Image 1 (tube, rainbow, N blue to C red):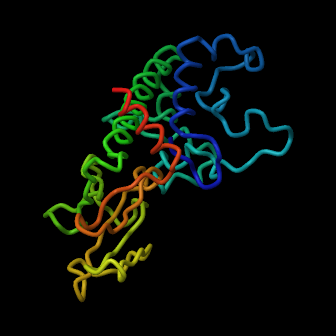
Image 2 (cartoon, helix red, strand yellow):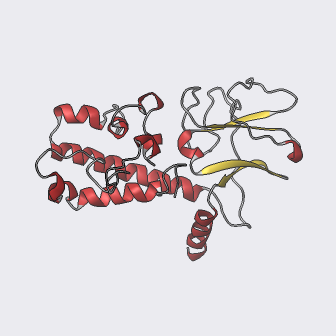
Image 3 (spheres, one colour):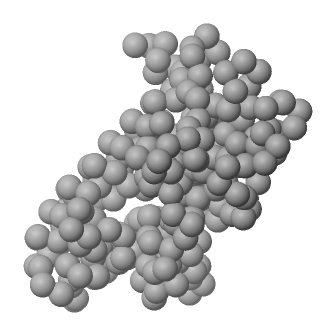
Length: 233
């Protein structure tokens, strides 16, 4: 339900596809790589270059890239550096001291949690015109600045990526800014907001007369899908 700028694949569907590939033993039955140990993501259809024919695209074009810490996105295999659990294990570290079965088990657990979280975040936004709107949390509204999405607990950090916004009280003066140089308290009534990189791929912030700054889904088709699910329920 989320698209990268350069990768037209849907990230949520990529993760679901990878989970299915793992759970059906894809890495153990794939003949193309039977002669060597399997690499998660790289040796599955999840890889942006899996179907490329001599003209590979850079890994930075992949929908998975924003899951990689910014400092490691220039690595030769960025997907090996996606944090998979609380201790911070990554494929890069697991390849050094775990066997294939243990690695796959760790990734399956991570995939299930990531998929659930993405689905819950999408469902948290009310898409019906008759429903209440989800208001954004100002960046400096609390002692510990965080993502403007109330359902997200990601703490703010200048080098953590994401997208900055600033809004004036008057609707016509609302300004969307990607600058990180705004002062904490704001000037002339300007309030500052920040969507973490993960949420910025799903949501945006807009000013609505009455409720003020609210969260909206980036993709209209996703809004329609969620609305249908809500109506069916």
